[in-house]
Length: 105
Image (cartoon, rainbow, N blue to C red; front, side, top):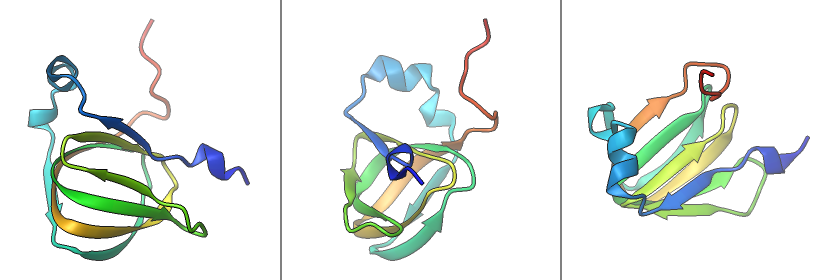
């Protein structure tokens, strides 16, 4: 199984125009206090962190991806990971409803 396909993608400080194009301020919000959380993503999630700091450890790996306030993060469908939250998280999020993110032609 290719672990490389299950990559968390972090875009640091995306432009205001990109955030507005994505309509992020209209996405639902979610937050959590510091702690460790076992998470499984049954759909691709894109989230924008308003505050917080997270180290995400994909299941079966000692590597981690770190992200925090101001980051736009894409988490692949099917990923199981542990979130080690050092600063309480507040984020906007959206689950991908379509099977692929292809745009209409």
